[in-house]
Length: 140
Image (cartoon, rainbow, N blue to C red; front, top):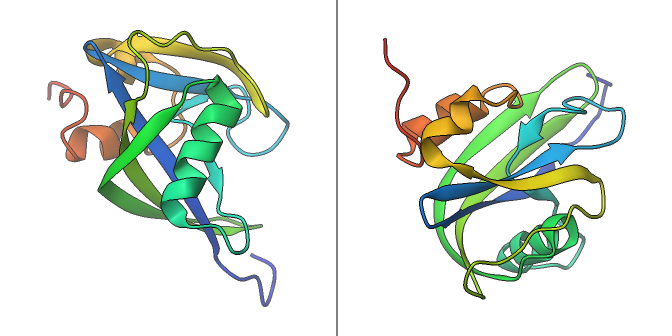
């Protein structure tokens, strides 16, 4: 990590609807590009955390939602960055919302909860989701 690099506060939206979880395929060329994750991103200066959750959700998927309880948090430190990510449950504002990939997402999809861990997820996401009761724990 670069000397003096400060942690960046990020958020993610854990959106369940009808036994499915909303995932986005990351675009760009950075860490995790092409892999699947829950929608999210950085909290902007002066922005409330819960507002950042719903903004990022809408920017990446077109889905509007209501931010609920904290699911959990993770810290990611690698050679170039330090992120603290707060993940919140989000209820879709509309019934059966359609998704459209936007912003920096290549694709967006509703994935049955039992199939989430089978996707090419960003590192640690399957364990985080299973550990917080979002998806079934993988069989030993």
